[in-house]
Image (cartoon, rainbow, N blue to C red):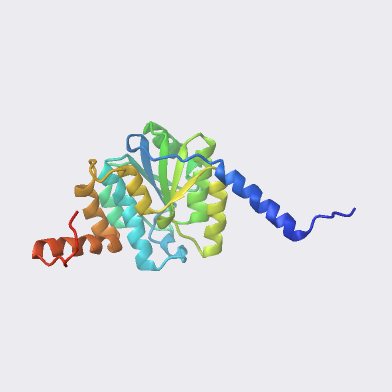
Length: 241
């Protein structure tokens, strides 16, 4: 059998098809009154699997993911996988942030959704929107995100706090999640969408200290402006508005 269509034409048709599919995805906004956070297997032993980030950067990112729901007073569920073995426990900083929050210690399930206690804890929040990050993008994050989508949740994957063995695996996992309707975002975008308006509460007073600790690029911008106002060193033509 002979097909007259050329390979380049086939590739263009495929690209157009994917673009059309992507354009059909609605813009779903985070609603802080209907959102829960999940911290998936950010364990000290598994930390070494996240090789698509510099270690210091990834440590900062997973701590930021754990700290953000505290700013908005959002329900948070933590889970670990076989922490008595080489996977190890959660970092002490995360455990101390969320004392009293549900911590589901799975003994064997790779996909957290396969654990009945974890499923019950998520459902008990009563929230329809889930923000999650896992120690490995292609396993911990993607498996759970796809399971939550199948259950009808609106799912937001924090890519800053999800890492894996290399960039290719991360890209493929992110494509798979997006194709299933998962919204992929970074920490700054998640924080901004939850806040929506700097005049809200939480707003400037609550988010600027958070960014000062976890987003240095924005923190030092704010510090520089604050120092200029305090010291009276605004340059001619510079405005404080």
